[in-house]
Length: 240
Image 1 (spheres, rainbow, N blue to C red):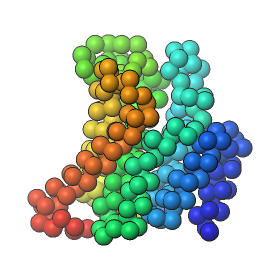
Image 2: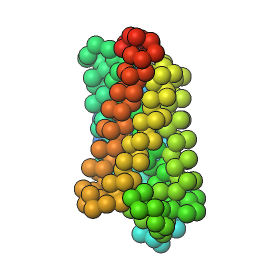
Image 3: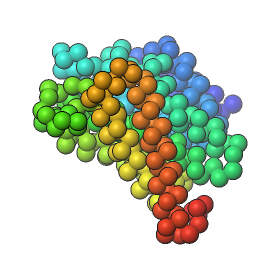
């Protein structure tokens, strides 16, 4: 009941402030309730941080983005399409509630949202602050907002965003310090992968598919790195 009340309160506020569309409101309620009830307060704080920062960064420099035709759908408002960024996190939250070793799935959840926020930040803020965007496939300079383009400024801001999510994971004991390192590295690699794909013909897959792919990659890589570090340095796959 508490999860429903909190989500209705925050979701309705976001709707009234026009931060979400109706589709985003309905899907956001479902996502929030599942994550809160399955993975707890810490995971819900991660979800809210992803939503708040992602929305803010999408709206930053909106006039310039509109002039280039690179703005997010619905002027930066979160809609049903945002589910692609949350699907891996939601599934991980559900698994953490029903399977042994929930720390593995909480790590996957943390990394999925860290990857999603890193990608959003690098893309949205990179368009505003990036000075020399290039394509990662050819290293040729391209105009800001070009599909798949990366910049030093956007990349560093994206890494900073993943650090924010990883720090929340540490503060709420969702991950340990090995997990913290794994999340940041995996988020960077997942974001880089999406940029590479976005710079090729594979971009015809669409943003939703690419978002789902890069969050999945971020989650899997984080779990793999975490298990490898535990095995090499601790000799115990499930050590905390």
